[in-house]
Amino acid sequence: MIILKGLRSNFLPQITILAAIILFICSSVRHLLFQSTAFEMGIYDQVTYLISQGLPPISSFLEVHHLGNHAAWAIYPVALFYKIYPSVYWLLLIQAICLAIGTFPTWSLARYSGLNKQQAFAIVMVYLLYPVVFNLNLFDFHPEVMALPAILGAILAAKLDKTLWFCVAIIWILGCKDALSLSVAAMGFWLYFYEKKRVCGAIALFAGVSWFIIATQILIPYFKDGLPPGGVGRYRYLGDSIPEILLNLFLRPGLVFGRLISLKTLEYLLLLNLPIIWWLAPKYLTPLIAASPVLVLNILSDIDAQRDLIHQYSLPILPFLLMVVIYTIADGKCGLWYWLWNLRRPQGKEVEGQLLPKFIVIWSCIGFLALAKYGYFWSIYLDDLDTWQAARIAVALVQTKGGVLATSEITPHLSHRQFIKLIVEEEELPRDEVLAEYDYVLINVRHPGWKSSQEYSRKLVDKLKVNSEFQLNYEQDDIYLFENQ
Image (tube, rainbow, N blue to C red; front, side, top):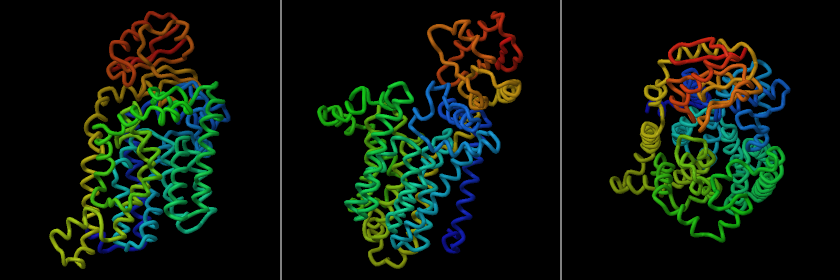
């Protein structure tokens, strides 16, 4: 806790830079270990590369134009970096920086709310050590990460009545993912009715609702040949379209309450709140109104990944959880921590002020150690180490920008091309005319990865060995590289 005692005004940039470096190194090492996947790293690396080359940003993984995939137009300016030098590490660096610079608006919000420097620093540590920040940094790349500092910045701009900066932040948030429009609209409702920031609240409410309609009912269907957003399939039990799902939320409440009131929901809420459990007070839960759309979507989804701290789905909730923590600590007389402290030291007000920031940092460290997935680096991230060298050699032998068929973990290393697919296990092997579309087929039989199996991969290798159009260029440690002649 020496850091808290010697806190200086220039410490925030230093810890932010350090956090960005650590996050970037961790995600880069993961990628180098062939742990990135086609979904999502391969998808975003490919479309960003295509945009930078002036080519149609059509993801061959999804077989859809990029704007048909969450309407995330924020990827377009990211492609400017690929013009300097096309590399997937730009995405990892941008993601690490965006996660790290959330410290600045977090600090400012804490100070604006009346917290002293030690308490504000503790809130910054709550942010950096919140498990979803570290875990999401390891899970490929997601455009909504770029919205995180903007959400915090928008809250700060609203509180400072900086309407122009608020509008800039809102526009950027909306460009990161279609579903974030719901968060923007709900934030507008919260700002308007509870924070009494009428102008900013009205802007966010209008912008969020408008972009949700435009993105989901016009833009995405236009680029997907009339199909709805991809996430609709996760709520199929409520309907086949967004209007139908919204209608059934009211007409079939039994389906909804069955999901809302369940052990899975309780477990999810516990995961979300455990790292900050001591600083939650019922009287200051109103910021969670802004998080409610994302929270409800995650709870109602058929996909369990939306209810953990590993994937990206809970990220938009974090800024508003932080506001609850800030409000509770600023009050000074509520929350579990206050009850616990006064249970032991009713007259310890002065000592309490000195120990509270330390307690916050210690508990944040405990939450990080319990829920962050740093242990993956000496467990599952090393599973493919026995084929690592062979995979690197095989990737280097792919000399052209022709079509590639490869396993999921290899595709992000070859996605700078217009046509690339991952090997997906099906009832039948690909026909010869389908295989003829690829210039290269790269298979890791020992570690076939997501959506495949060793048995299927072995059968595909055997089929290619007897295919006269393909030549086996490389074989080592169950890594096979075939080239179309």
